Image 1 (cartoon, rainbow, N blue to C red):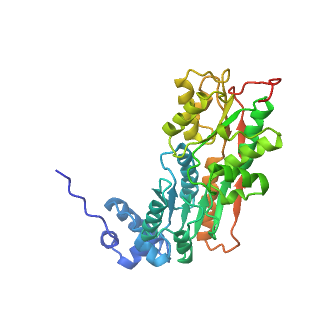
Image 2 (spheres, helix red, strand yellow):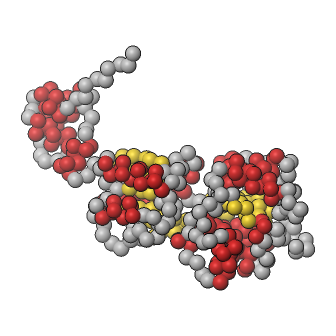
Image 3 (cartoon, helix red, strand yellow):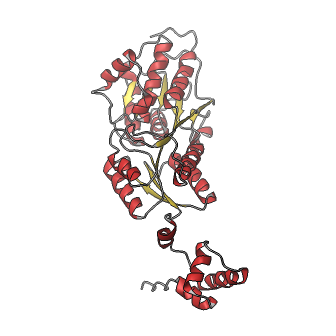
Length: 369
C-alpha cells in the first residue's frame, strides 16, 4: 500500500509557529526586506522544525527568477555529458541555482519537447546541445521570450546565442597527423556521420578540397572528418574513400560492424581513427573479435579520452577534451546572461589535447600505398 504523502508545510504554518505574520515569515524565508535578528531566528527555527521547503516557483513570482537553469543533453548516458553536467552543476550550485536535466537522444522533436518542459518549469535559462544545426526556431523563440540560451558542444549556427565548443577539426587533424608522421598511409576513420551536410560523402570530400568550410556549420563528427581530410592533404597523402567508415548510427555495435568490414577488406587499414568514445568502444570490440593486436597489427587513436583507455593493454592514445571546463564555462555564461549581461553573443572554442600512450606503432620506411 502506498504511504500517504505528508502534508507540505507552508509559510502560513511557519508564521503561526513563530508567532509572526505571514508577510514577515515570507520576508525572512525569501531573503528580502528587513526583520530583526530575533524574528529571523524564530522564523528559521520554526521552518526547520516543520520541515518547510521554499516554493521556488512562488518565489519567482516575486523576484522574477526561480533560481533554476535547464539543461538539454544530447545523450545523458554518455560519460561526456556526465562530465559536462558536473561542471554545470558545480557552477550553478555555487551561485545558488539548481539544475533540471533533460535528454534529447539527438532527436529534434524530443529536444523541442524538452525545451517546452523547461519553459513550463520557468527556468531562468537553458543550456543545450542542439540536435540539428539548421533547425533552432524553438530555441530562438525561447530567447525572444526572455529565456537566455547557451549552446554546449555544438552550434545551431542561425541561433543568436552564446556557445562553448571544442576545436574538433583542429584536434582531429593533429591526431591523424600523428599517425601519418609514424608512417601510416592507410588510416581508416570511423564516425557516426549520419546526417550529411552535403548530398553524399564524395560531395563533402570534393567541396572540402576546393573551398574553406566553416566548421561551426557542421556536426562535430563532420568537423572531425574535415580534420582527417586536411591532415592527409597537408601531408600529401591520398585520401582513400574506402577507408572512411560512415557508421550511420550512433551505437558501439554499429561501429563494431563497420570496423569488422574494414578489417576484412583485401587491403585493411594499418591504423584507425575513432571519432568519439562510442565509436572507440565499437572499434576495440571489433579488433578483439578478430584477435587483431594493438598496435602491432593496427594502430589506434580515439577522439574522447575515456577512463578505460588508460588501462587497456598498451593504453590508447586519445584526444582529451576539457569537458568539465566546457560545462563550467557554459554555466558561467548563462548566469551572466540571467544577471542582465547584454553584450554581443560570444563563441568560445577550447583546445583539446592529444594524450600519448602506447597504441601507435612506428612504420617509418614503409612504402606508401
